[in-house]
Image 1 (cartoon, rainbow, N blue to C red):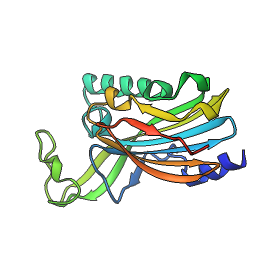
Image 2: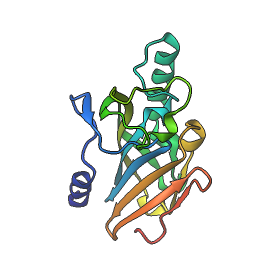
Image 3: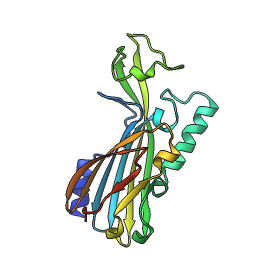
Image 4: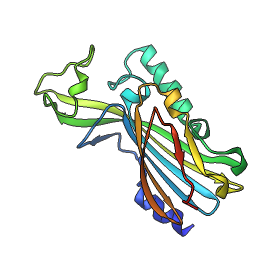
Length: 194
């Protein structure tokens, strides 16, 4: 349990009562995932831009937008269907918390991290403050045989076709490693982490 507490301090809880926060960097197609293994449990902490998950970043104004958000939250609440571990591990979801937050980016700057936003329906004036949505999810998984987890298959990319990559940080009793998991290579090899 000591490792789990340490790992959770490395990946601070993304879910808070505060719904608006300031972000320094914002990239479409890329999210982050923290994974921390300890004893018979592991936690996952996911942050992904709204554009990756539902295809837009603005507040869900139409009924169709709200339906897309609700479907995404429902699917994000099933982590073992998105981040698939070997059946031999005998894992079950102990808790899953998913939230959608609006992020205040500040003044939009032409040519900044938003250069890919010159698409239909995403125009900004140069002085306009920009708001973006971001999905946050926290999971706790318990396993009968955690040592059987030698890989994770990211079906996440199949479910969320706008997502292109996840920057993944893994903490286990054997140390910490950083990975970049991409849509084109959606398997994470964890051999040597236990």
